[in-house]
Image 1 (cartoon, rainbow, N blue to C red):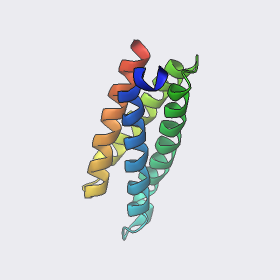
Image 2: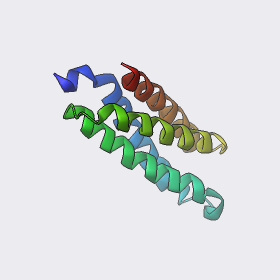
Image 3: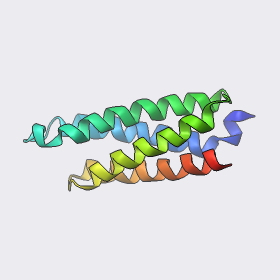
Length: 110
């Protein structure tokens, strides 16, 4: 069943989306919000594509692997940006993004 076949990747995508939502919300509370603008924008993009990818995998869509390759790229960009900021929420998001990128690449290569 699709939800079992892709379980690790679906979980990584959902965890990443949650971390990105938290990061974006926390970034909006930082003193220099303008400095966090790219981080916030990437958080929103990343959360959206992670949720989309999880849905595609859950449905065993023929386009799941293709979307997961794109998701990995977005996660990598978001993780790289978050890693530049020393806030705990950014560092946690960077880790979740990197895990998700790794899982998405693994899924897409299978």
